[in-house]
Length: 387
Image (cartoon, rainbow, N blue to C red; front, side, top):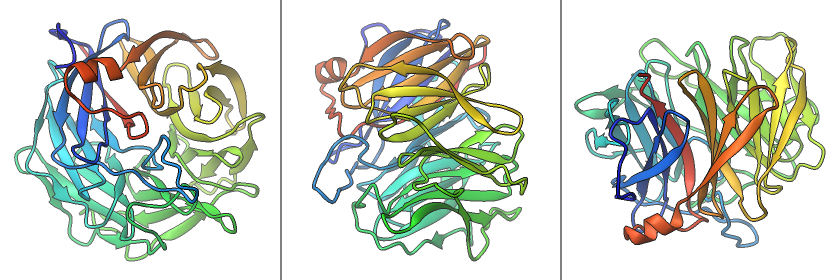
């Protein structure tokens, strides 16, 4: 346990992974009625973590070069996490009465590739797909069984064939994020591209039985776009808000309405992660290099403006983030990797986010004998019980 007094009936929970090479652990934290966060427990994922490499040998934060390494499904009441060092995926049942309690469903299962980095559930929580980013890279999908765990979906293993290594070398030339389209008819994965070729989205058609089209199509970024990182749905628009650390962000229109755009963010250094708030209608773009969160508001034509900028202390290195709606109000949870913290913001309206706490991870983990290194921490998922 990471706390002396666990909340009896929290409103929800947040989850992230330690991604340690000896043993990957899932950290669970309770979410209170006021959005406050309290670390609760560390649960073995059943696999090992692994940190990617860079051209200059740097082993800094964001060792997976990705978003979505841990995901929760509210409808399915399940949680899934990658084990990059074991090339497996683990599934857990979430106790909705106390969502910090998670129980393994089946055994960890092969990702059918190497160095898995990102996951996505379909809207019902009945299917899960994984994005592999290592030497054997591509996607693979599973049915979610509440007793057996994950079972492979026939004809859903698709290779991308990028020239990569295990662990992956990046960030250039690596994959980032996997999502289903809003209607579930497409599976999309982002590829960052290289210095000589811009990134793009790989898109597969999804059949009714979960099988994928034999080949993927490439969805290009708008002119000026460089790196495709996060994929955040723009609700009801069949479009995606995509961070681009080379420029700022991009709008990717999947509906053929020609609303694609590449947008520069002044002063940005490495805008890689994003999350959406249903209450504020804002997209929160995380700049790890600048220790900055920028709130972008979009109009009906998907034209954006920066409504507010929220600055974190130097050295925080914010990475993965997620929004949770608790009792009619939205809260943003941001993993401060280098600071080994979770930064919590109350989203009080468009352009009115306010930081309400910074939750220390390292001290409680050390006290409980859990190995934590900021360079390995990854992921952020939330589950709300909906009392």
